[in-house]
Image 1 (cartoon, rainbow, N blue to C red):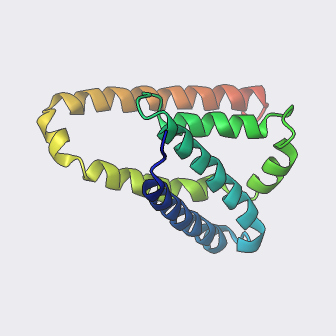
Image 2 (image 1 turned 60 degrees about the horizontal axis):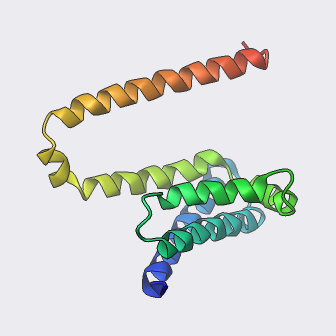
Length: 154
């Protein structure tokens, strides 16, 4: 099995660029030091790149790289894992909201590149999207309500 090093190098470059945007966003928006957050960002990028390598090793798998990334992050952060203290202490310096902005921008660009395919799906994609968005919204609201009630905050 031969890895596509050119593709992996490009993916690493994109992740480093996204990491830089996240670190700058944290510094500007929340005042979190770039130097303090840098080790956590590098660990997140390393975990994401590991997922890309695994995905590249199994090209016929329908399991997405995001899924591999989630599993790798879970294994690195589990309390029984020898890496959890180091991983979590560094990754805790990365604010979740700082990550969402560039990721949503990249998702928007990704969808924007597939406009013609979306047009071919006709009006049905609008109906399906509205149903999914509504279901996700109410499910998230229900989960938040439950958690906040269990914590005694509402």
